[in-house]
Image 1 (cartoon, rainbow, N blue to C red):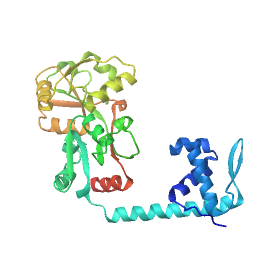
Image 2: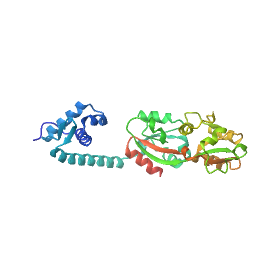
Image 3: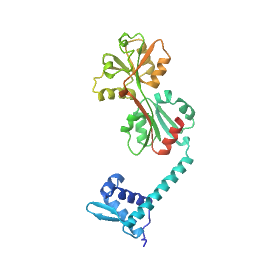
Image 4: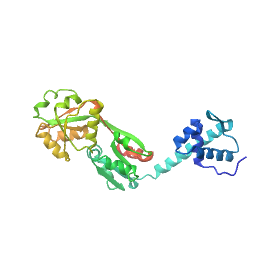
Length: 296
């Protein structure tokens, strides 16, 4: 017999999670609800259905026969609801409602066509060379999606959807007249230990490239070479061209810079440990899917 309680999708979600974990304690951790709150929702649901849904014991909870039947109904209903909402969101999706953030190097050298086409359509486009300038507004809900190095996922809080877009190697860029490079020019790849005798010039520590270089040396347990910081990418290339400095750049940027000065600059790939991964992070699956589709 159905009781006086009103069923809710929240009740169904709690019921499904308890059914799958077989533990109110574990469900509490996953759902971020107190155990008394979960027990109350289960009691309300049993009143509504008019049947006991769980057998309770010191070891946890198990579905009763009626509970198994109701589990099939509940999962089917929630799956149908999710599918319908996704279809509605997909149908009504518009880039004009989105605020997107992206690293300058990614927008300029990897996906220029996307941002050229979308710059006037987007509600807001935030372009920066500082990862923190994207992560903070994303965490605070002021950006719907960000396109950034995958490693920054460790700094993102709250629920999000991530889709890896591509991976590329890092290269060292050097002057053709840099005699220190002679032993390495014919090498298939350059190792971290090979760079110890060189002076690196990088953007400041807020730059994802700088952070990736430092993290990789630390991960390989190799001492860092001397690093000089410079705020301006064009000045960095100019200094490399006219000195013994070398720069570490992802392939998309290195190829662009060397192609502009093939007589003055050279490049060699770094070992795979330096590889760069870039992802799109969004607050919902439909946002990530639409951005990925447009970038393809």
